[in-house]
Length: 468
Image 1 (spheres, rainbow, N blue to C red):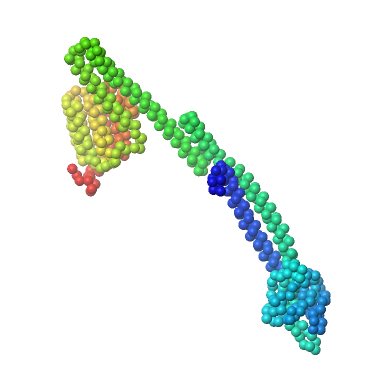
Image 2 (image 1 turned 180 degrees about the horizontal axis):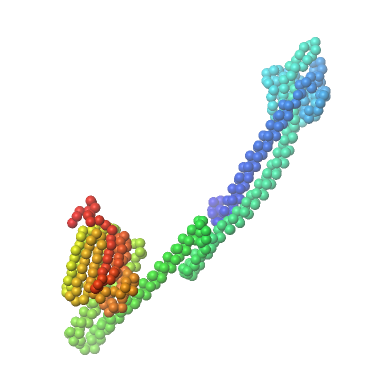
C-alpha cells in the first residue's frame, strides 16, 4: 500500500490526502450529528412518555380481580398495558401489546420505581416502555398494587434516524468527491511553480544552459525556492565563466614560455643531429634560458593549482602565527633576489590566525613585486605596525586607472609585460589575506607603489602559544 501510494505523482497524493482528510472529518461530524440527533429524539420520546398522565385514565380499566381489556378515556398515541404482581396483564389501549417482563412485575410488586427501558411487543416490534407503579381500587376487596406500562414504537425515531443516516452518507460522499477535485485543483495550482522549477532543472541538465531563470514573485516558500534556484544557477554560470576565463588565460600564459622552451630545445637538438656545435657561451645561455623557462612554468603551474581551489577552501588548518616572523623570513628571501637593493624593516610583533604556508607565500609575492619594479640601487621599505603590513618600492609606480585591476587574475600592466611573471601573484595575495579575515590594497606612493596588507590579530600571542 505504501509503495503504491509513494509511486503516485505528488499532486495525486495531495488530492488523495485532502479527500481522505475531508472524508474523515465529514464522517466524524456525521457520526457525531447522528448520535446527537438520536439522543435528542430518544430524550423527547422519553419525555413524552413521562408526560402522559395515564394513571387516572386507566383506573377503571380493570374489573374484579382480573385485568380485562378496555379503552381509556383519551387517545394517548401509545399502547397502555396493566400488569399485576403475579404477571397477569391486559392491554387497555393501543395496538402493540408489550411483553410483560420481570421489570414490570417488580414495579407492580413495589420493588422498583418507575422504569424506562427498551423492549419488544408480542409480535416483535421494538418498543420504548415506561412502567409506572399504580393502585387498583377493588372496592370491598381493598386496593391492589399494580403497574401500568406505556409503550411507543422505536420506529418513531428509527425512521428519521435512517433517513438522516442516508442523507449524511450522501453528503459525505459528495463532500469527499468534491474535496478530492478541489485538492487536485489546489495541487495543480500550488505546484505549478514546482513544475516550472522541474522544467528548468531538466532543461539545464539537457542543454547546460545556465541562463534559465524562473519567476520568483511573492514571499512564500515557493518564491524563496525559486530565488534560491536562480541564485544557484547564476553562481554556477559565474563559476563556469571564471573557469573558462582561467583556462583561456592559463593557455595564453603557458604558450609563451612553452614556445621559447621548444625553440631552445629544438636548437640544442638540431645541433646534436647536424654535428654543428653551438659555441660554449651560446650553449650556456640556451641552457640557462631553458632552466629559467622551466622554473617559470613550475611557478605558473603552482599558481594555477592555488587558484583552482574553491574560494571557500583553505589549503590547511588555520593556526595562530607570528606575522612579524613570516615577514622577516620573506624579507630575507627578498634580499637574496635583490642584493643590489637597500632594504629597511620595522616589524612590530603581531599574531594572526591564518594558514602559515599560504600567508608566507602571500608576503613573498608582495616583496617579489617590490624587488621586480625597484630600480637598480633602489630602496624597499617594510613596516608592520598594529596589524598593517606595508611594503613600499621606489619604482615607476602604477597609474591610478590601473590600480582597480591589480588583483585580477592574469592581469599585468603594459609596463610589466616584458618582465617575468604570470599576473597571478597579487591575486593569490588578495585571496589569502581575505581568507584570514583581512584586506589587501595597492596605493600610489611618490615615487613608487605601496602595498598594504591588514590582518586582524593581537600584539601578544594567546596563552597556549609561547612567545618566540
